[in-house]
Length: 504
Image (cartoon, rainbow, N blue to C red; front, side, top):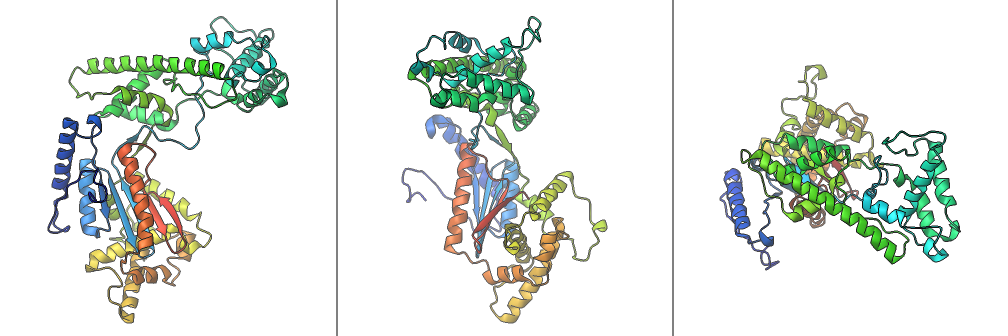
């Protein structure tokens, strides 16, 4: 790897056998080396270094040992596998926090629907914009944010005679469909030549931003609650606790990120609007810093309090709506639950042990996945995962993968045994009675069993390239903390050129 990129330093350790390897000690050594490099500031200006384990085509027993070691050490593990025309990528992570999840579509946070009114610097900018005194060119290049605020002021003025509000009462916003339609019509009526003024067309299109408050998603709220209960809080937990306190003191609103979307506007008013939002974002970030320092004083050294750099704080404040968390169960736990061990095809469901709440939730998700098969049902990626799991169980039982003996009788014998394991694995997943499984894996034709036996764990270059690329992408996500990694298994069917992601 170092020869491929001489700018990247690297070392290696040789071990006699994967079967006897002490993965826990190897991970401890890697963690110590990463900590030493971080202390020395040898990489990325002294940023904390991270370690991640990547397992490629390991046999079941050493893979299970590595999985347990990574889970115990809270080290992310990416398991990549190429098996004939099939491939899988499994992400195992005990606790992963993502600040920059970078969603494809994001509603801008403009703070126009605050019941306490817009922030002062924006109000000053709006009050200084005289739409009636502008010429046609200026009027057609007023940022739509200013148009929406002025339209909302007019809308409220129209309510005062019929529905007066008490002093200090929260501001009113359109709530019913009729009120929202009325507001959009008001915005449109403020244009001089609506068909020629793109800024007013944008204002009508985005009118909902004036009355729809952007609250933090439930995923973020859950992360904030968990951060307060963290036993060994990291920088993310400290920032999350500070965010919760900030929101408690600001009407439930998080820090402003300070960005505004592209819009039809002249340069000067757009720059002024951008400046108002950036100034408010700086104020909110300064308040977050004060809260962070307060938290450090509160803890008084009883609980180790990590340092939070200015860059970390700025990135966090810009992405408060996009915070995400990911945690998977270990591959070893999944394998134990879904290996079919202790299950026979003839077992009555009533005799099987009750699954845990977490396992029941996973089974529900998998059952839902069987209701949306591929257009050729037998190529649904979930089915091939079951077949691959059967091959792993076969490998543990016999010390070899099915299909290693190329004689016809031996191949047929292996296929028969793999088919039996497939039935037990499907039952352990709670899928044996689903229509998709019964009509494909358990139909009696043994198509999937014969196909995986034919592969004999062969690695085909084009399939390896696909799953290797996916695994690399997931490793980068885990290292950078950007984008949301797989939750938790990617299954690639190279026969049909399709893939699926499932949570096992």
